[in-house]
Length: 443
Image (cartoon, rainbow, N blue to C red; front, side, top):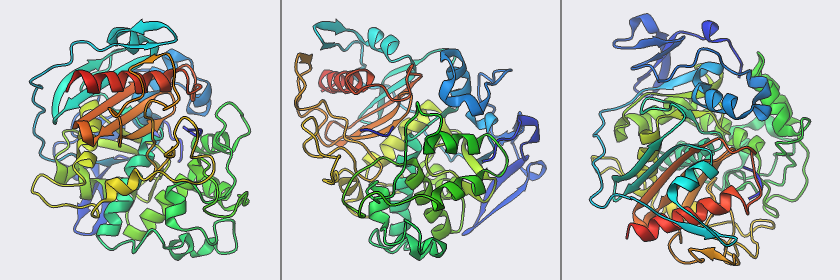
């Protein structure tokens, strides 16, 4: 979402299992791993289902049809090289005392039910957690509880959360640090003088074209890099060659290039790939139920910070619960800085972030403000406080984790919207209306 690796055939993927050894991350041959299964070249505790036989070509990702999009998004972990992050000791979700049976919203004079909403969103999965319990769950298009669905830019919100953990651990001293403290070879480039806070808020001022419809945009070029060998070097060449468009901190402009660089900074600061750091800090200690896979540009060395997180529906929900709890683990240990979540939702007031629809701002620490626009008319629910303070992780084609601390509500959505980024008055608006309706219904 903007306005608002290497490709290896499955049979060539490294048969490796990531293992954390103290503070050192290393990869050992899968033959030495216990209870791991070979899932078409990816070693996981259990194989995801369904495992489709024929996969769409990743170089055409932005032009897949609806069928290819469903298959591609649930087989992303097979279509690209990836690093595995292992699950912990999980506790099954309980059913909510008050299940969600129905919720409706109205837009442009028409009222839609929850079932209507699922069809209009091309939803393939949805999970509603109220007070940490399952109030509603939907899986469609053959998806199952074992399906690993790809995050697209929801992964950015995961990376920003890991940055918070790295600050708490002292691996990153402050968001006021310059990018060049961790990437000294970027001195003299457009990134020189940019802080980590400007990077995480997408206010670096470095020009980046995120246009998903333009085959020559920076994002499209990144996608092409991902579909051939030498991905890391290919993408880094794009990033290093970017030019400055505005003074740092002046203007907000969504950038998967900047997000990629943030992930690279995090890996250099922690000394491990994103998957390893996620496993060590959250996935195992919080008690996620299934292994996940992170799209890797260099297996065992570098995972992409802009997207590529693949996990099950319920584990997406568990991550939302972790964030809503302020980063507290089951043993009570808090691994995020004090007030980190509040800071993450302190929307930047830089140019282009503030609008008549969202006067408080649109973007924070790689989380979105997707409340019902305050100037929305002829909609039900009307703009209200039901989504106030909510954080939205958003990815193209309709991938969502909404964290709403005030309502103790987490909503996950998997989708295959016909457009990567539709006009806000379409699916994004209807998502805010439905999520607001759900919040009000579950009170």
